[in-house]
Image (tube, rainbow, N blue to C red; front, side, top):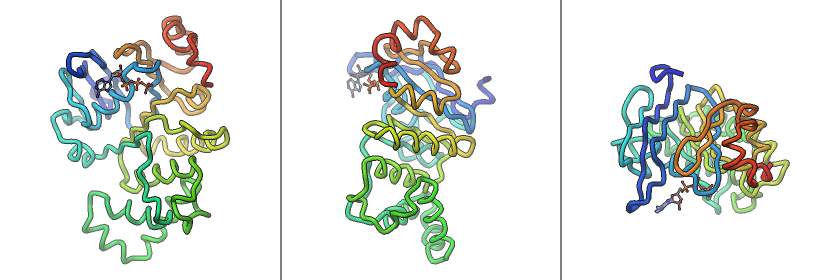
Length: 253
Ligand SMILES: Nc1ncnc2c1ncn2[C@@H]1O[C@H](COP(=O)(O)OP(=O)(O)OP(=O)(O)O)[C@@H](O)[C@H]1O
């Protein structure tokens, strides 16, 4: 993929924490609508890679371009407004409120607040909330308080809250952590439905999940990009096997 045809370009990025280099010389190019998996051993720099894209962490060197515009000097808030959503490992839903109320708040918090307030009064709003709930498999839980949802359902609600903002690119950090096998399978189906409509970058350790959803996989090791390719290329790559898959990573599958 050329730099010009990519929606997101991370170019020679470096992140340093008080002298410790967590990410160095990282270059990623992700196409619009692509579902990219980011894998690698603990401490490889995957979360830091997501952080540097969404502006949570500043670059010591390098650049990040989104839709051909440099974003690495923007604030986290300004980067979110360019259409980049982030799902963190710990969900931030309102536990006392119902799924419906959470989704209503999620929609009203979207960048066009005034237009949303106006749209709230229209019946389309109800339909949009129901469509979002259905997309993530929570259509029968609209009246349920978020505190009563299972772990997997809470993660799906969090994903729906991000989708309510209609981001172009969604960054997900270990979305299936703690999920049952059945919940993980449903999440894989959801991500396959989302790709094409949104660009997704998903950090994951669960190789079974990665196999189910991945198009291209980027492997990080010690802050650098170790390999990139389709699942068959990654699983047969000796350097990847030595650094990750052969040393227990594949055991997560
Ligand atoms: N705020 C910070 N201050 C100091 N060091 C940090 C900070 N954040 C991350 N690191 C270090 O940077 C390295 C990369 O961390 P990061 O969380 O990006 O790895 P990861 O690949 O996401 O790991 P995991 O799979 O365990 O979540 C680690 O050695 C980590 O200890």
